[in-house]
Image (cartoon, rainbow, N blue to C red; front, side, top):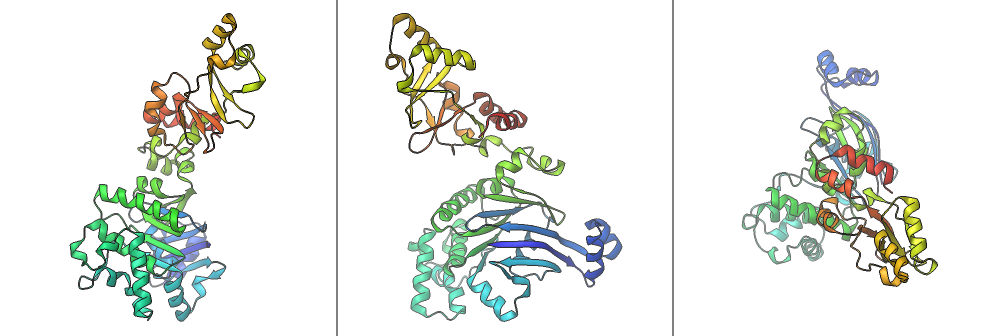
Length: 402
């Protein structure tokens, strides 16, 4: 949907000289010392896919807020291009840019910026009122947007009657009322209390599941980025230093700066079962007995074997001890199958697996919605993540993950 190429912003009265030095490889500090021009964004290039939450994050002064304002030209770029469905935003005239902002990109700010003298529904319909949308239509759209964020019953209240989290929902509803193709959210939750902030993060993900909006989200909080982002762009000194999924950034940091940035993050709240599961050894239910099962376990150096049907749907698990007993006592496979196998979905977070993995007699199976066996959980990887052992988890993902 969006393709950004070499996007650059230099603040100062004579950015041309600084741009020339930037293209020669000079750094931000050296350019400022030489020219007194400040590099806000340094040749940023990235794409945003339709329907994803793309998070831009970094510490204060990294350039993230400048970057998001370049996308809708609240700040004019010094160089580079911003293609929206193939159209270059940088080349839009004023009239086209106004139309673009009304219909394509809406922005949600950290400050709620609600009108205290207007009701909630009047605040939400304000953007439509500016566009001269008829009163009946804009009121309908405003109430629909309030329903999406769970504030229908508060439509006729005033902002000071709402909590901070509810006020931020009003701001989100106001952006949604325009039916934008892209939502730009600049530190939208950072002014909220921690518990309310987490609730808003979860609600944003739920809302995204319903609406499939394209969202560009700015934050300085790595945990927030990991929780809500489909992909993350990490910035430092105006430059993007790494782009990737939360898992890619956590498991394969691009450089020492990223490694330091993520060192205190709990991997168990980022990685899920699919990242540490290994390929399961199986036996098809009607194609072998206890002797075949025991031999397979010996060959593979394992003490458990999963039993599946011909479509690889999980039936149960066998232990080496039970297989040996079945041979001695001439028992069938049916007599020794443990059918009550703990199962989890591929998306289950490692932090939610600890109790199950640590107390079960048999391995934990990872299954699809239709019961197909996908993998088996490695206990060491889960325990390593919970203990903060990043290297152990990375090794498990590299060698045994799918």
